[in-house]
Image (tube, rainbow, N blue to C red; front, side):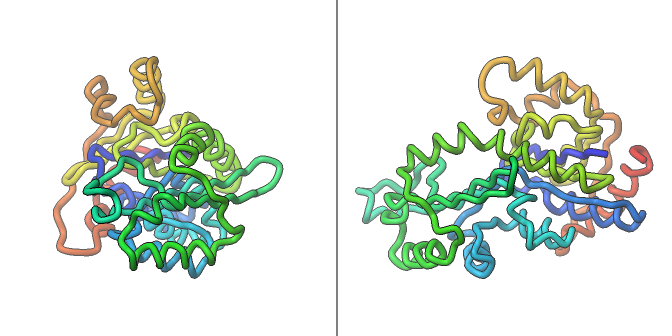
Length: 278
């Protein structure tokens, strides 16, 4: 069974917490479960732990992917679970002539290919690193030195082109490998994208989450809606909200707020949803 988790909000929808709760519930039923975060981005400043983890693993890895990999005991193969990873860096206005923000400001990037063999490539955008605050720039260069294989230098424009040209295809290669190794594959999208990659849409069910609720959609109906709406433009620019307005959920599970341990908030809703799925 393939389950796609998407979020209504650009950030903090609850996708990863829901995914972890779902993985735990499926494992409790003695099912063989794996997770995937095909495309991920994270902040070198707001998610600094990812810089620490990347240095330790000698592999660029984001927060959500690391949490999912830990849950399914795949930290040593996190590059397969999360083929595309992008580290975003803030800008120092004193180094940029007052500019404080740049869309998709890629400092370091990883692309994993899962074709004939597993192959990892790291990339660094020196022009971005040079424009980050001084102490963070030092940290970014340190993590870059720790990565294996060592990162290749690209301009920011070139990095964005690689991401647009290769991300979906490389990620889908790895999805194909993962689904051969499990009964259930839980796929987490990024931001509020309707789907992270084309093949991730081949889901039996789609769970759309936002604070307070989880909507369950039939996978084939969701896929058809995306296909119709995304006839123009890139798939990854289509949002969950744009798709959901044309669909009726099979079921909505309501989620109570919690003070901490967000995975616990989804425990009862997940059980409710699984009674309808399994």
